[in-house]
Length: 531
Picture 1: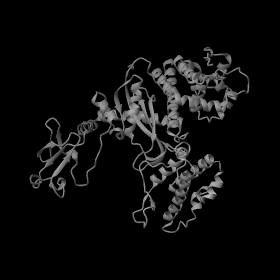
Picture 2 (picture 1 turned 135 degrees about the vertical axis):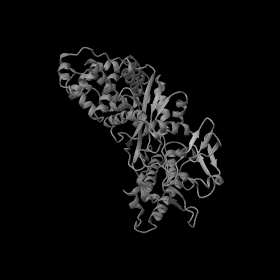
Picture 3 (picture 1 turned 30 degrees about the vertical axis):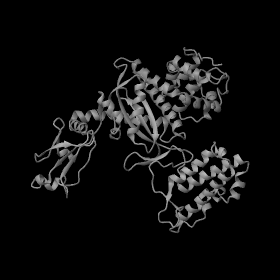
Picture 4 (picture 1 turned 180 degrees about the vertical axis):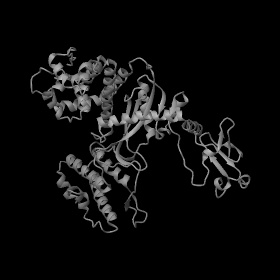
């Protein structure tokens, strides 16, 4: 059964020699000297519970595996290299308490590394370690135990899966269904594909198997017709061959659903076709699956001009301790920024903290979670939405709004009351009154009255605009450079391309990277205090 790991706290002579060689990379000495603060009794208890369910004894220590996983993330080490480094790298041996052990003998296997990471992901170990590092960093004089200022921003995380077009997506999904159906029916894939004349399955290339002259204007329509005919032939064979109970059970039901879902996602009935069964490719699609190897990947954009494919990595950092990661959330690239606000803030609050001031990018301003906390007393720091009027036209900001009397005053001094529902208040200026105004050409529409529509958070936007007009307000918003630096650190540790496929695994890796980033913050603070 599980036995606690109790390495010595005193530095041995052999460890002292190794530490002298690690002066430039202080994370080695930090983990050796303070590993008991990271892997403390609370973490040990969590590690014990991870293995208690298995009912089997483990020949290696979970504490050593936890430390090895942090080193693996910190130095971008693949799974197969971890056992090697525990056998040949004295720095790894020092941190894991293995100096003096049998030479050239790995502490654990590659499989053990993989299974520990999967078990740690399922049990939320990195969430616990992230909480541990945050509390250690804030456990100093001058910081409130519960109240903090936070900053939120995001950066792209390129996906590791292969992006595929409609023909390859549907064709490969059909190939997966053939593989599953052949397994369940006891036939070979080649035999089944040949009997049904499924060329897209047997050929090395889906598009080559369609045998279409792609120079022709109707080539795409012809290729799609051939592809869907083969998929329909395969689907009918599955329905005729297997019973209802077999079709409704995994893995067969999953393979059929995948193929049908991709067809429905990427195609639609062609209204110009002579038959209702003819379909055409849909252009675009907001939540379109773009990869079979990583179904969670999506097309997204960081800005109007910067497009990417994969995920967005959202972080919440401490505004008073540079670089300290409070929370991290990985979401598909097409998810808008404000959707990450609730999980980020809730994660911080679940640790017992209250966010009293929040610095965000404009992309998060639409979040109901942000405004609910703002109304409860949280100070919000961001830039207001900026809408540039057409040349020669008045902007909405040229109209004064009196929120107390619920009225709007135009540049000429005319006053109109606010009307309509709370989330869409409007002020209407009569065209007959405005026709002779000096601002008529800049203000009046071609037809009808001038209508000024206020945003549901119009008062907040105007207050922020007034703050931004002052030097103090601009200086306060420039503090957000700290979250940019923190994202840069995350990019160095986690990388700018996802190491794993799937949202859950990349979320775990992002949390592990945040823990390593916080270790650098901790060691910097400890050495600054020592100096």
